[in-house]
Image (tube, rainbow, N blue to C red):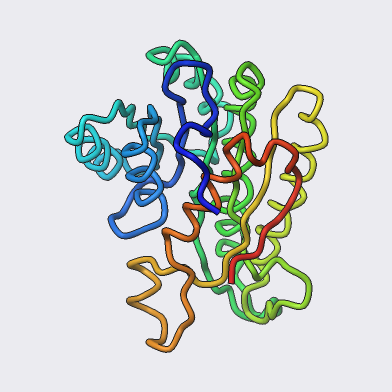
Amino acid sequence: MMARADALPTEGAAPVLVITGVGRPGQLGIAVAQHFAAAGARLVIIDRDAAVVEARGAELRATGAPVIAAALDLTDVPALIAATDALLAPYEGRVDGLIHCAGGFGATGPVAESEAEAWHRQIAINLTAAYGAARAFLPALRRTHGAAVFFASAAALPGASVRGVAAYATAKSGLLTLVRAIAAEERANGVRANALAPTAMRTAMNTSTMSDTTNYVELDEVIAVIRFLLSSDAARISGQVLELA
């Protein structure tokens, strides 16, 4: 269900959305940013790679959208928190929605043969980064009674095959626990948090590495669910994980 354009969280002014993982063309983060820029939102886009995020910011600003592009490491939580006030200052500290797209898949092989470095990397980019984004932007979300959307994976759902991907599945399972904690802790503050657990999405990376017969979840389908979860139509939905298959 696509939410109405006027159903985005706002109190008169255009909503401010923080979107993480807005890096390479053809990936989820930039598709989400393009959609909400066209819908009239003011954006803060974040990626680790300065050149990449600045390029995406320039592309979005060329369409007339207000966009702040920031190169930040979401796993460096103290530095991220320290940067937040200055980052949001042009929008008077406002955040109506957090869309955490950052993360990455990595097969680590059988646990008995896995490398610790690969394990720690999957935990960092898929779980620690989600914690960092939540820790940095929840205070601003409280002020607007905003909402957050995180990305888990079908690999984190009961019955999923996790052979060879223990680190990735563990990180995404941890993310689901994080989302439930945020939802419970922030309910009294009017903040909602939910997660999407898609199977393979039709991104540039997936289509270059996966079979032609893969049953992809289309990015516009994902964006429609994000928009619904951010909207007043989902005011009673928090702490949930929605599988997209």
